[in-house]
Amino acid sequence: MSLHNLLHSASHFNRRDILRVGGPGMLGLTLPKLLQAQNKPVVAHAPKATAKSVIFLFQWGGPSHVDTFDMKLNAPDEYRSKYAPISTSVPGMHVCEHLPETAKVMHKIAQIRTVHHTMNNHNSAGYTALTGMEPPIDDQRLRDSLDLFPAFGSVVDRVAPNTNDLPTFVSYPHTIADGSTTPGQRASFLGKIHDPLFIPNDPNDKNFELSQLSLPSDVPLGRLSDRRQLQQIINRQAKALDESAAAQGLNAYYEKAISMLNSKKVRTAFDLSKEPTELRDTYGRTTYGQSCLLARRLVESGVKFVTVYFDRSIGGRSKTKGGWDTHGFDDTRMFEILPVRHLPITDHTLPVLLNDLEDRGLLDETLVMWFGEFGRTPKINKNISRDHWPKCYTALLAGGGTKGGAVYGESDRYGAVPDRDPVTTGDLAATMYHALGIDPATEIRDTFNRPFPIANGRPVTDIFA
Image 1 (cartoon, rainbow, N blue to C red):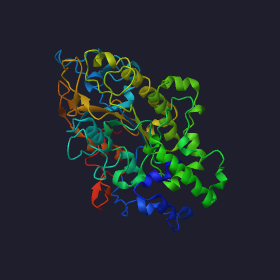
Image 2: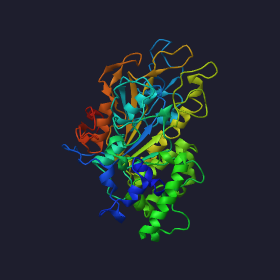
Image 3: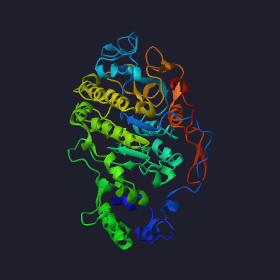
Image 4: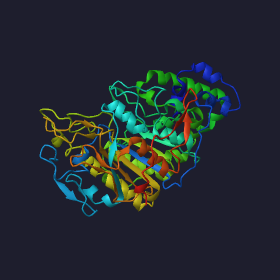
């Protein structure tokens, strides 16, 4: 959502046509009529909000539920985790031995242990987890299209947008993909205006800044009121956009871009240099660690929905990069990889984030969600690792009115299927909207004016205090 990327938000319109659009909008532009659906959302009875904002920590690749939070201590050897369990702050509850700091804050976390869907491929499962909706087919080649549902944050921006001059929906620092870009990260049929403010910059970079919200050095903010000067800037930056592949993931909207260029509040929210060095070290000097710290800054400033992606790729062999997709190979196996990268990063971020939010009085009003697109097979494979498993896995929710230490649902003795209280991804979506005070039955309309409820499920109200 930057001035640099203004015209990418309407890439199906001719650039000159966009600049000629007339009307009473800001500086003569009326892009809302071009980019927004004409029908307003049909809002049902709104529940009482327990959260003002959401931080969604999306664990791309699919963490193993039976090796982290739903360990089956009495399962047969071919199912039982190779990691030892440790006690937590909740009596009788165990987590993986490689999550000692997380164990100390489990009394702040509610678990849903029976999340399930039917998508076995990363792109289709990722879309399902990011939107709460299953696509019509389980296909690894699934791509973004206007037939698919928008991201959670885009829906929130449509039905309950911010009114505080800050973006409603921010995502970073990756565009996730497995071959093709995973759908469900942007606004789809809601229109580009509801895309997230997407930041591809690494928050762990010592020079991290919002280049997306910068002007050419020779143009002061005061000159933005000059229409001719502004059009010259747009033309120059649109040309740069055409030449910059990295910029193509940044969808902008004109009026929001201008307001952000003028907003000290926005710039301050993204300024990690204002955080104490000690706190930055505590979160961990990793891309993901600093992304979690930035998420706290954003919700503290008033951003309503923040999505942080664990990594851009699903992962695989590497102990130094990639997501949770650890099937195992002859030279690198899951149980060797996770303790080196994934589990330590998690243990250096999730508990620190929850404690930091609580110390600042923000945890009660911020819903933190932690889950991926699926879990891993309960039975260990021939590579001493685990494969994809969407039939039952665990989601963590904390803050935002949830009951810390609660466990909803129970998987069977292997962690293979729900044994009690199954929860769909639609139910999970409904739970999140419910926390924000948005009725899950609220309707939005696609490009054919067909109505759809924002969530295909019911909220899991038992996890709320």
